[in-house]
Length: 301
Image 1: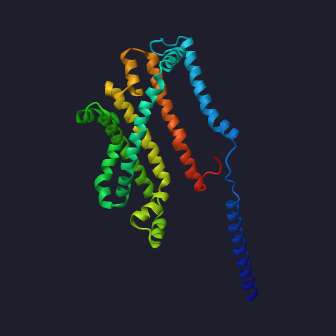
Image 2 (image 1 turned 60 degrees about the vertical axis):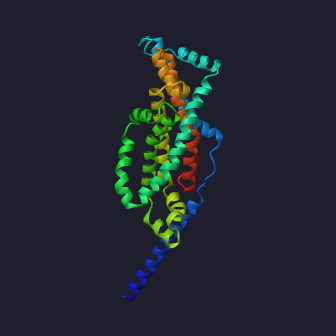
């Protein structure tokens, strides 16, 4: 009997040592993970080349459809016609001006939405009464098409930049606030208790505990907020036109429709798409990679 007990204890001790060794090996493996940056050539091959190939394939199919006369040029213009419209705007010195008119409005409107949506999201997430009162309204506003705000904004402010920014804010603020609320809801309660134990309460807790922990969800809300800002701006520029507002991409699209200029319409659509993708690649994607890398969720970038 004594021999059996001794054998059992020895086996338990061996198992414990094996478990401890396995845990140490796992921790060593985590420490050994390489977080160096991916070579530029690999980035170009894996991340830059595929989108260019996809765009090239779309353009090839486009050109084949035009060459085969599958559809009339009044419905699908030739690539050369769209290129001519682009060249005319460039030579006339209006291309960059039109793009900057819309981009500057969109970015400023997004920053205003960020300044309003962030504290609003914190308030909704942390105060139960406010969540019960405002939470459903924010969800409803997020599902409301941005174009619905253009007519009342025109009646409130007239045809000016205040109308444009109002439409942007009403479209983007709910997305940013809801993204932050979702991120805060996913913060482990242990983090909040640890923060309170260390004295991080109120604004200090929001700054040092809540916001860093909710950053992935908040960043997703920011990306969606930018998408809503850009879409809201395009809707406002298409519907509301005035010489005082200047010529933006949305108005360029509407002018093409009014003039029955299909190449101009497609050019405006392409420029709107390119700007939206460029903002995501140049601003949001690097920030997202930095957040993931800082949390050990992205080995290579």
